[in-house]
Length: 162
Image 1 (cartoon, rainbow, N blue to C red):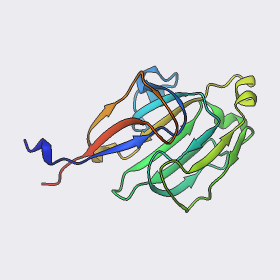
Image 2 (image 1 turned 120 degrees about the vertical axis):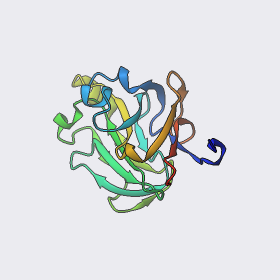
Image 3 (image 1 turned 60 degrees about the horizontal axis):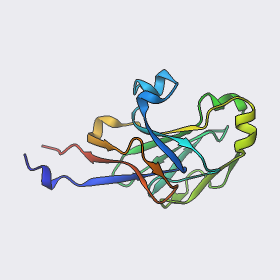
């Protein structure tokens, strides 16, 4: 009831590539939505951008992941690659500072794709809402080809307070 009153929010593609459902990610923590709900992208570009406007609240010291807090309270985690933490920062160059305010499309991390792939790591990039208890529903764009900073990978709406 009153579905038309619910505002939906877009999460953009942080990298170019093909959108995957989390069940297609070869890591149980992501595939089983243990760390949150969202989607993934089989990355084909070398710059990872902010998927939405917000504050860059956390950058992992290995630069393989970062978190954003959006103005509506949603917390996003962007995790670049599978098991890439093992690279200890090699292949990742930080382009934005933790604590800074970013706009959708702001470059955050530059990848050395050839190096990361040569080490045997997948560049599947996961974009999760980690406080998914705030979410009413998510509509995924699985299977679509997207361009970083331009296209959406999913839409979500917040639970309505009673």
